[in-house]
Each structure stands twice: as C-alpha cells, then as structure tokens.
Length: 120
Image 1: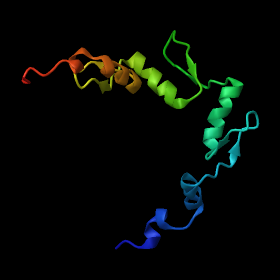
Image 2: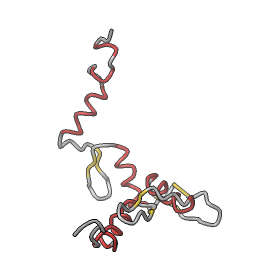
Image 3: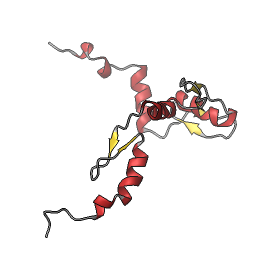
C-alpha cells in the first residue's frame, strides 16, 4: 500500500523548493564577471569556464590531447574515437557521431529529394 510518506517527491522538502525554480524567473546564481544569472549553481560553474578558459575534461585517447569545458562535449568527442555513429539518416542510413551533423546531412540528402520508386 503506497502512502504519501513512501513517495519522497511528493513531500515538502528543499528539493521541492529547488524544483519550483524551474517554473519561475528566479536565477539566484550570478556571474561576478559578466553579470549573467543562472537557475542552477552547476550552470554557473560551467559558465565560469568561459571566462577562465578552464578545460578540465581531457580526452584520454593517446595522441589526441583535446580538452573540453563541458562533460557533454567530451562525451560527444569520444564518439569520434570509438566510431560510434548513433544518429542515422532516415533516407540513406548513413551514420553520424553528432545529431547536428545528421540534421545538416538530411537537409541535402539526395535520397530525401528523390521520389519513392513506388510513387507515380
């Protein structure tokens, strides 16, 4: 039997107050350099790297040497070394490491502009 106390997300707590920030204009974390405001402290921390030039995420691939300010960027970069092509064209099935490259490709994919053989 489920009760209100067994569902932590329904209980009033600090996380509930923080979640309310998603729906509000509140952005309490301000950059001391440029004044830009952020809803989350982690967003400010990542933003501060644009001013400091810090790039703590270094590619572990031997001979690569690239580094990145954001974890998500190195995750995408690692796909180039691992040849992971998780995004595929729905027309020609070519694979891409990044979704943005797939989107660009699909705009000009030849098979996209050719009618299906079954069409009149």
